[in-house]
Structures are given as C-alpha cells and as structure tokens.
Image 1 (cartoon, rainbow, N blue to C red):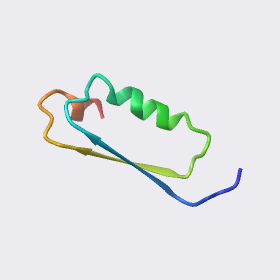
Image 2: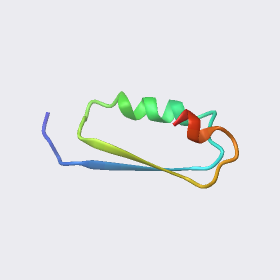
Image 3: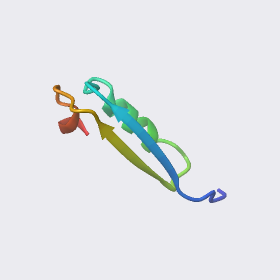
Image 4: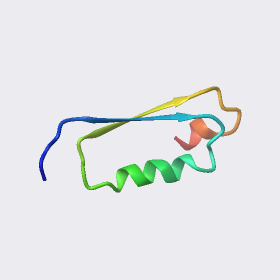
Length: 52
C-alpha cells in the first residue's frame, strides 16, 4: 500500500455517546493505517467522554 502521509481525522462531538464508539471502530477498520483521530467534544453532558 502506498503511504500518502499522515491523515488527520477531526471528529467534533456533542452528546454523541450513543454513536461515537461506532465512529471510532469504523476509522480503526480502514485499510490505510497512517492516521490520527482528533476528537473535539463541546461540553457533552452525556457520557461521550467516558466512551471515548
């Protein structure tokens, strides 16, 4: 596989506890491996931070 360099994936969240685990798993399942995931939470009041 060709290396295209580091890919940054920026995921904004707010009250996404029900969906963020699926989002992270989907990113981890990609075939390209040179990536970083940056998650920016906007003061969620649910347990988004704990799930992440």
